[in-house]
Length: 266
Length: 321
Image 1: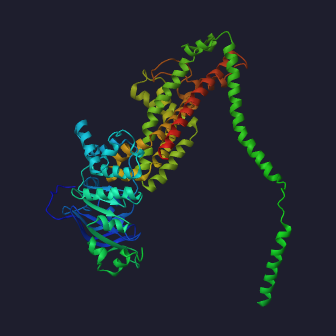
Image 2 (image 1 turned 90 degrees about the vertical axis):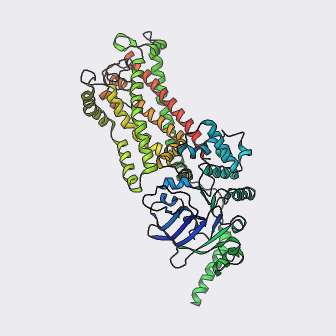
Image 3 (image 1 turned 90 degrees about the horizontal axis):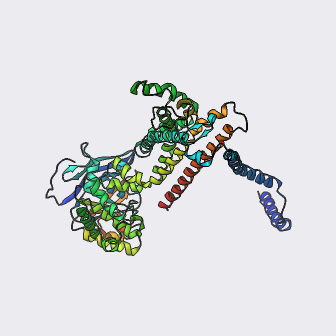
């Protein structure tokens, strides 16, 4: 990524007429919206509406799928992430990701956190790394539970702890934006609650975009909600409504949004 | 139409009535089944029987070899000269040659095979994989005698050209070792590729999501996660290298020679067994029996390697449970 400085724009990511294709199939069409900085934006919609595809386009994770192609613009600090001279690896160092299923590396808790900084050319001392690991784990509300067993495998933790470890791992590289792809769908309600509380804390320092199937979750944690739906004719996902969360849930402008959020389909 | 319906109804009624009357749950003989079961049991048993037979013969002949006053167990394992004609039976020269050649082979095969495996599992497109995998399997199907000729008539002249004719003998361990390495590369490549492909894709996603390149992901995440499977593959390849005969018989020379110098000729355990077996030794002579003792040592080496690889594979399975 070329040198772009922090600008004063209130938006972290803006998309302009974004179309995403898998081979010849258009999965997402004409999505234009802007994601506000230091807010939680929820992407909701029934299965197959393209919300995960949209999320993964923000850090070019779709590049890893053979045949996937993105048209239009995804602007980050005013630069289109899909310009030919933009390096996907650099993008992902700025825009981190937490996945649906907790996926810690089969390494120690410590090494899980240290992995990101190390591949990013970490040059500090061991003591500084210890501090960084602690800060990331504190930031992910996991420190108290694991501080005495940092050398144990990340896989020895419970599902909810593993997911917080993955969040700690993501914030250890100090990204600006964290994308979360249904981060609680594999967790029990208590672990889910912890992650939600954590998201509200993280909002102060990061911009969070979350895909969720759980509408209560979207209503509870998000500031903005984007509702996606699959067009019945060409089966491409499109953005139906995007607004402040309370507006989307209580007074939606579109009939289809109302039907979805009131649980009449999907 | 009405007739048909009526006929059907009658038929149905007849069936409904007749079923309870003809039910017969008594055991009946199924001769075919028991014959097949017996045949299959014999097939399974033959493999065990063969192994037992081989081990029995090895032990028996070795026993009579060590019973001979010309040799003691201690001499056999510590003697530095193997010259049956003058009654010297020290296995160290043969063992050493096997070790040197296997080590050279592993030095060639591990980087090459692992590189192939990483390319296939982490980099190759579907098309490249579809071409490469059969080619690697083809490599594994080439008769070893061809590899032997390849070592003697292609690799050795190149080595002599590089290091000089006075340094490199016509028969030498380096050439044989390198070619054995090529021969076992497919084993390492396919087994490592299996291990790498078994690593869950979610780990790769996590690594890419943190801003890793493909290489960082492969080396720092995927390979460590597959390490025990790769180790197990390496051990299988190692035991193949230890047992390889044709290449060393053709290219490494036919004289027992205790040396670490890879440019010199030296005969391995397998090469010696092949040469002696092909010669005109009289049945029951001490020279004849000596090859069984060598065979027994080979058997224990490969057995140990196999046990090691099984243990490692078992540990490897636990990781993803």
